[in-house]
Image 1 (cartoon, one colour):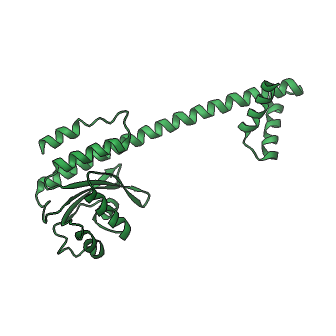
Image 2 (cartoon, rainbow, N blue to C red; image 1 turned 90 degrees about the horizontal axis):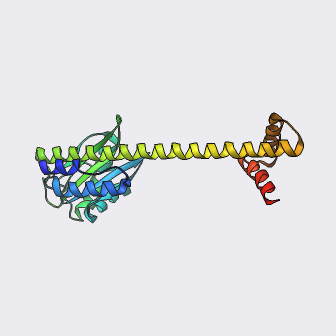
Image 3 (cartoon, rainbow, N blue to C red; image 1 turned 90 degrees about the vertical axis):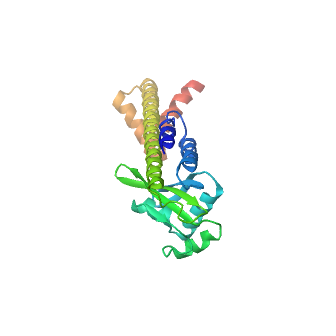
Length: 228
């Protein structure tokens, strides 16, 4: 348990893709959560679940059976924000169709821990075993919660980075758009002997008439003078 905590604290988030970080954390969980044989991370995009990382095929298969059925412990944990433990697939009464299918593939017990994210839940950590009652100890749950928190932090970091990148890109586009419109206005002012406001009206009228973006009209005007 202490080793898992130390390993999670050493996971580097900066300048790494989210799937790479989640793969590392999932691998640590497979080795560090008591009872774990196979581990996966389910994320929810809207209401649509997908497996963002998995340590082996057992977890991926179990996840996809739930997606196929439309319900199951990983999906219900992710959507409802509750920890769901299955001690034995042979006696489990919840999710009957999924349980019947997954035990045919050797899964006997599982633990699904929700991923907290700014007051919402964005998915679940899923831990599977071929043995019954593999996750009845409090150590398994404590370790699962530690891993779930690490995954949530990774997602928060990636989301913040994505937003900053998008903001920077949008700002760059806005600056480039403004620059080319100013150039086009200058061309029109020189060619047609109009003032700045009139030049802009010419651009706007052309944009509406041809149903094209103002920037594209401006680019065309600027490029026509450079070609000449």
